[in-house]
Each structure stands twice: as C-alpha cells, then as structure tokens.
Length: 224
Length: 365
Image (cartoon, rainbow over all chains, first blue to last red; front, top):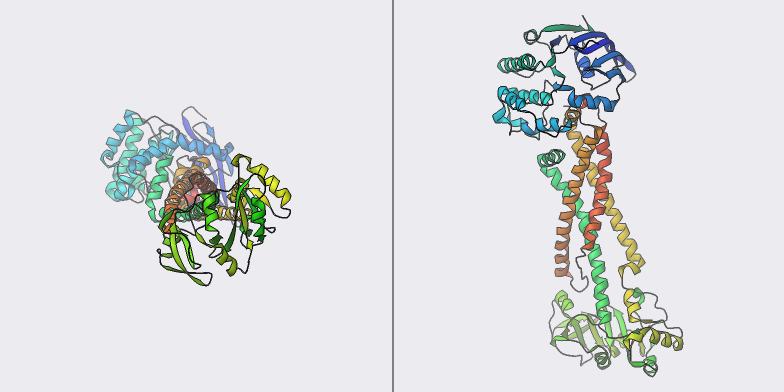
C-alpha cells in the first residue's frame, strides 16, 4: 500500500448466510482510496455499497480478499481489534442520524469521545467546527428537539470529534430536504477541503455525488 | 459518561425504573420485617424472662426447647423441696398456658413472684385479688383496646382486668396460679420452677447441684435459658429466614432480568450505535450492570423505608403479639442479597446486548 493510500481492497468478498442459503454481497471488489479524497459510491439497492461500507468501517469482517484501512489489515482482525478500529480510525454518519435519543447533542459528542478513550476535551479547532456547523447554540437539546438537519450536523460533529482517518457517510442526505441536504454536503466538502478529511459517501443521488472528487459505481457486488 | 448514559436511560423510562425499584423493594421489606419480627420477639421474650429475677430454672421432663414450654408437668411439691436445698434463696412455680399464638398467660403466686422479681409496676389498677382477675401489660391492653375494669375473654372465660402492668416481667398476661391450674386440670402442677440463689455469680453451680438431686428435670441457668430464645438457636426459624432470603434473591433476579431484558430489547438500536462508536462488549455489559445496580440500590433504600412502614403497621395492629424492631445490621445484608440477585439477573440481558451484531442492531426499527 502506498503511503498516500488510506483504503486498499483487493478481491474483497463477503457472503452472508441466510438460513441454508449463501447470499454473496461482495463478489471481488478492488478499490484504492488516497488519503484526503472525497469519494462517492453510487449504485442501486443490493449492489453491495452498504456491505463495503460496513467492512471498511470494521462493523463486519470480510469473507475473503484483502482490505487495508489506515494501515490495518482488517481481514486478519479479531472482533475486539475491529472494535478498537472503530474508536479512532473511522467515524460514521448514517442516513437515520443514529444519535443516542436520551442524551443531549453535547453528550452524544462527549460519548463518542469517551468511548474512544480520550479523556481530554476536543481541541479549539473542534469548537470552531461546531460554530461552522451552526449547532453551537443547540448542543443542550436532545435529538427529539432538533430538526433532521440539526441532528445530522450533530452526527457529523460526533463522527469527527476523534479526528478519524476516514469519515464514512451512508446516505447522509437520505432523510433530509433539499436545503438541509445541500448544507450537509457543503459541510462534508468543507471538512474535506479544510481539514483534508478522507470521506467515503454512499448515495443514490447524483447531485450529492457531484460534491465528491470521484464517483465509483457498484452493481451486483462489484465496482463497475 | 457511563453513569450519565445509565441515568438518562432510567429517566427516559421512569415507569419501568420505578416499578423495578418497587418490585425489588418488596423482598427487601419482607426480609427486614421477618428479621425485625424474629429479633423483636426473641429480645422481648428474653427481657421478660430476665425480669423474673431468677438464676436457675427447673422445667418439665418433656421440655426440650423454648417452644415446648407450655403445659404443666412439674409437681408443685418440688417448689418446697427446691427451697430447702442449700444456696437456694427462694423458688416459685409458674404455670404457662398458650392463649393466642405466640402469646401465653402465666399463672403465678403473686406474693412469691413479687419477692423474687421486685413485683410488677402497675401503670393503672392493682394486683390480682379475685379468681377472675387478670393483669395485662400495656401493649396487650393496646392490642385488645381494653382498660382497667374492662372485660377480656380468654381461655373460654371472661376476665376482669385488675391492672395494667409495665412490660418486661415474665408474661404479658398474668392470672392466679390456682385458677390456671384448674383451667388446665393440672392441680398441683406447674410448668417451671424459677429459683433464686444466694449468689447470682454462682448460678451454674446451683444449676448443677439441683440437677443432681432433681433427676429427670432439666435444670439450667437463666442465662442458658435466655440463649435458647436467640434466633440462631431456633432451627425452624433459621431455616425459614433462609427460605425468605432465597426468595428475595430469586425475586431480585427475576425482576432485574425481566426489566433489563426489556430495556435491552427497547434499546437495541442504541446498543448498535454504541458499538459502532467503538463501544466494547465490556462497555455495553457495564452499562447494563450499572443500571441493574442502581435499581438494586434504589430497591434496597425503598425496602428499608418500607420496613419502617411495616413496623409501624404491625405495632398499630398487634403490638403485643408481634413486637418488631428495626435491625440495622441487616440493611447491609439485604443490600447484598439484592445486589447478588440484580447482578445475576442483569448478566443474561447484559451479555446478550454485549454480543449483539452492530449492523443488525443499527437496522433494528
């Protein structure tokens, strides 16, 4: 893997076993992502986008093939190793925001910080980021008091609070209206430009994909 | 942060949390009330036996424990014989008749008993005079709502309350010995002979000496007799407490298991989020266990508070039959029992949450 490459997949395969039936989700994916890239992954439902996303994020192991993320060989990692990877190397943004409903926005961010093992507060840059996300005044509210756009911004803040090598965004605008979608995409673009944040974004929306440097398409478990 | 997550989770489902605490509190109250009752009854019996002022007791040949005290099998003639023995200052026979479990009435020779014990303290009224006279202590008077001069029906007879006595001496209910002997068809028989020696410090020697001459009658010192009232020396009670403690653990276990299992199901998605953020199995388990422990602490505290309520209720209903005390050292034991039950109960839901697949959990609606 080159020094500049942060994700490298070779012949990556994943087969789910449902009952007695084997369902291939990835059928040999080759992908290379340089550090600092904003990459969009597009494709129809069932094309394997989410599975690829889950493997890169360390949520599930691959069945075969090679996958390196930030210098870690995920194919050889145990469950506990992948849990450690999720603490600091990757940050997730989900379509459904997935904030902890009982905690305030501030505590949601603090929980991610705590789980990652950091005990000191985030640096001043992070405070600036909160300002630029436009949620600094909304941090003491619980998710049910925030709009979808606000929740997704909190989720983005939570995803980057530990300065992960990679930000994984799964349909980040899927539950937002046009205006909020645009705002979120601009935030991602800004994170990428200003901080050099590597971003992998799954999307159905070609307009959203246009914010990325590069777009790869998936179909039937392969990159086409 | 763990504590914050736990507390916010509990606040989010206040009804579930409060119900769990209440259900955990019930066995705590049950255990504390049982212990309070058994200790209270035992200490009350000991205090009354101590108040007799005897050093040694001679019991019937069939007497094997405190519970087989009732009945009259000692020949009253032995009282005189005992009094003639060396080192014996005085002796008096008492006949005991079971009235309303666990209460007994004692038939005494008032003059002899007064000489031995220093006599009853009359809160109102006065000593026994007629055959239908009865003395009762304040607690029994409260329980029966009766005053001096009032009537009391006991042992199929109507009694005239001659005096209300202070507690702490012999029995709560006292009548003339001859009357109780007649009721029991036990003429010239008593249940026990209380003996006062010339030197209280040599009670054991006196008991040994009398034991040799009174073959077939158990003769023991009052100290030994008092120790028989201790909870630990009543095997059936000990076993009963064991059963109640066991039930306490099972209820604590079941309540926490059910409550936490429900919580884990309700929070499947949140567990998925925590795992996606890098939360380890230990972290997830710790959250579930911490919540169970908070419920256990809450249940224990509420259980202790409710045991005061139980004590008040019991003392309002049956102050004489059921003298309950608050046994503080058992707070810690009840807490430990609850803690054990809660930990066992939280393990299964906690472990099943810990090993949940994050992708499936995040997809949970």
